[in-house]
Length: 180
Image (cartoon, rainbow, N blue to C red; front, side, top):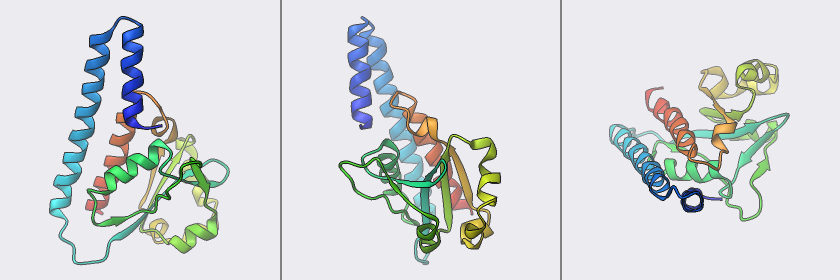
């Protein structure tokens, strides 16, 4: 359920397979990666002295319909962690103890009117084509200014050491918002 629990599970597997040192090193490496990304986000935030109101970012999953991550899922937790270093952005991540994702229909997307849109999907190759077929979303500021980012969902929801790559993918998106 959490990054700490992933690290704990890795340590248990290391003990069970008699690879204790390797498991400890992997756990330390993961923590170092997270801290490095946190530090990069914090350094980027030092360059953002914008007097304007924060820009709206919307993170959604897409299969056949849109879903929004909650704080129960790993992506929601990673977004919360990263956004504390991004004062120039607001991004709704609903609190939930029971639901991993909540439905987010096109009307809600239009109402949110995001400046940046992040779409997590297993259909990376066809994502832009699929989004362009949804004509209702063409009025979004993110769509008009082409500030739409696609992220591989399988990495984002991987309850393994690869969760570090998921956080790095989020970092790349958030870092790009400083440049756009």
